[in-house]
Image 1 (cartoon, rainbow over the protein chains, first blue to last red):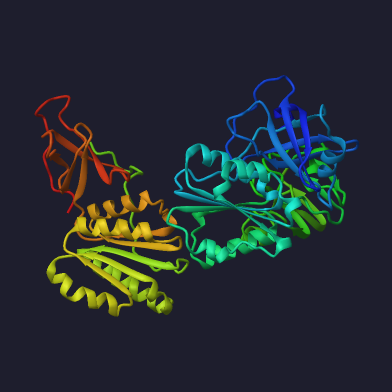
Image 2 (cartoon, helix red, strand yellow; image 1 turned 90 degrees about the vertical axis):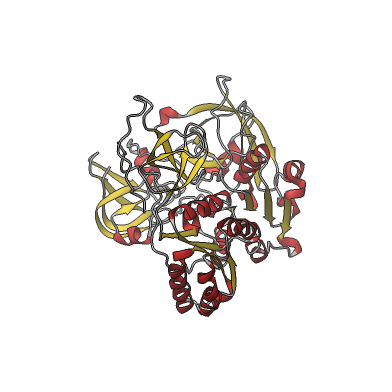
Length: 320
Length: 204
C-alpha cells in the first residue's frame, strides 16, 4: 500500500483509560466520513517522528456504523521501538496523523451460530468492534476478558453497557483465570471463537481447542507482532539495484521503505502475508518472526516476511 | 444441452476417520452401511478409546436392521439408533445436532438424495467442510427442484423429468443447491412447446 493511499486525520480526543493504555479518537482532516469497516478491522497509523516514520497496526474499536470518527487504543510498550511512545508522548488533541484504509484480518464468521470472544489485556480492542457487529445482528455471543488487575480493565463500562449479561471479566490479581476446558468442551455446533491477547494466551487457547476437537474453520485469532530488534545486517535489492543497511531497531521493511522502495503490506505485524518477498540469495540464516509462512517455507530459506523478520547473514539478496 | 463442470455439483469422497475430532457421529442409509462399518473399524484401530464417543444413526429395510445393531456395536459404536423411515432418521438427526458440541465430526454414507438431505441439515448447524466427511453409494437418483413452481420431485433417474406438481417437463441440471438439497430443473420445451429431447435414464 503506497503512502498516497493514506487518509490525513486529526486527533479530536485523547483519554488515558488505564495506566498503560491511551484511547484516541480520530477524524478526517477534511471533515468527510471515514471508510466503512467491519468488527475486527485494523488500520495502520503512520507517525512522522523526528528522525523516522513509524507505521503501526491498531484495531478499530468503535461502532462500525458511526464513521464520523475512528477509535483506537494504544498500549505503551515497555520495549517500544518508538511507535507506542510517540502516540503516548507526542500525540495530543489537534495532532495530525495519517492512516491507511481499514483492513479486516479478524472478521466474524457470518454463518456462525454462536461466537465466543476471548481477550487478554489490550487484546480487547478488536473484540469491541466485533461486539458491536454481533449486537447489531442479534447473534448469540459471550465475551471472556482477562486482565492483570481491575485498574487495567480498559473499556469495562462500555462492555458492561452493551453486553453486561454476556461478559465475564477475570482478574489475575484475584487468582481468576478463564476455564478454557470448561469453555471449549461445551459449546453447541456452529460456535466460533476469536482470541486476541498475549502470545502465551493464544497458544494455550489453540492447544486446548485442538484437544477438544475444534476444527480450524471455527478458530480465529489475531496477534500483531511488533518487529523484534536484532543484529544489523545488509541486504541487496536485485530489481532496484540498491544496497540497504538494516540497523538493530529498525525492521527490514522499514529499512527498504526508507531507501525509497515500496513493498505492498496490510498489517505490518506478520499476519496478512502481503509483504511476502522472495529470497534470491542467502549466505547465512533468516530469522522468521511471522505467523504466516508454513514450516516448510521457513525451512526453505527462499521466502521472508520483511515486516517482522530479519537475517543473520553475510549476504542477502531480495527480489525487490 | 447439459452444462458440464458445474462447481455446485457435490463431490463426495471415501470415508476415513478424522482423528482430530473428539466425537464421531455417523449417519447412513441402506448400502451406506458398509462404508460406515469400514470407518468404524478404522477408527477403532487408530483410536480405540473413541468408540465410547461414537454414535450411529441408520435407516434401512427391516432385513438390514436385524443384523445392523449388533454389527455396528461390534465394530465399535457405543450408541446405535435404527430407523425404518428416512424422515424419522432426519428428525432424530436434527435433535442430535442440537445437543451435540463442538469437536464433533460427521460421517455420512448413502444414496445421492439422502446425502443431500443430511448435508442440508448439517449446513444449517454450520458444520463446515473440515467437520464433515461424506461418501456416496447406492442410487444416484436426484431430488429435482422445479424452478417454476418451486417444489421438489424425488427419485429422478432421467435427464428429463415431468414435475410432479406443475407437470412441466424439466431438464435436470448439474447445478445443485445445498440450501434446497436438490438439483435445479428448468423447463426444457419453453421455447418450442412439445419439442423435447429423448428421455434417458442417466442417474442410477
